[in-house]
Amino acid sequence: MARQKPKNLYPIKNLAEANTALAEIAEMKRTVKATESSMNDEIDRLKAEAEASVAPLLSKMGNLENGLLAFAEFNKDELFVDKRSKELDFGSLGYRRSKEIKPAAKKTLAMVLGKIKSLGFAEAIRTKESVNKDELAQWTDEKLALVDARRVEKDTFWYEVAEQEINDQAV
Image 1: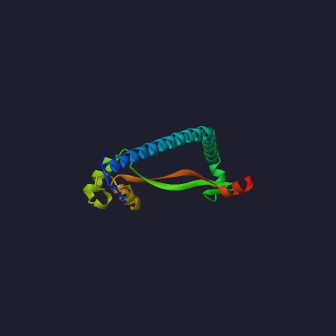
Image 2 (image 1 turned 90 degrees about the horizontal axis):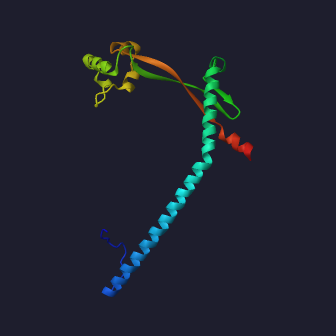
């Protein structure tokens, strides 16, 4: 065990008192360790109980999320004609448009990196020498084509629960 420096001075007058103080410290440490061990056992038990009790809820929630995704995909053309989201009584669902930089057809990121180097676009190269897609995202499509890259748009599904309304109805 490592040596300890006391934080506050507790006057000890002789070796007998020093020995008694050491015994008290040892007993206190044993008590603290026993209490912490008991606490950790209780925490582990509570965590296991909580995991077991929420597992069916998490499973059903995942099934409902998958159902929302399937519904949205199947009805995408009718539901999201004017707007990218749909407000409902208990939340909203919709699609968020995002853009991603990918190599042009039959090209790899390594080929894009070589082309970026040869054309002197150093700002698009990270120091670990990989393609800086954040920088490429700022480029025009013509500049991307110069280095054999292309911009690909994709739709990512999302949903948001209106927890306040649900809490208000539960009360």
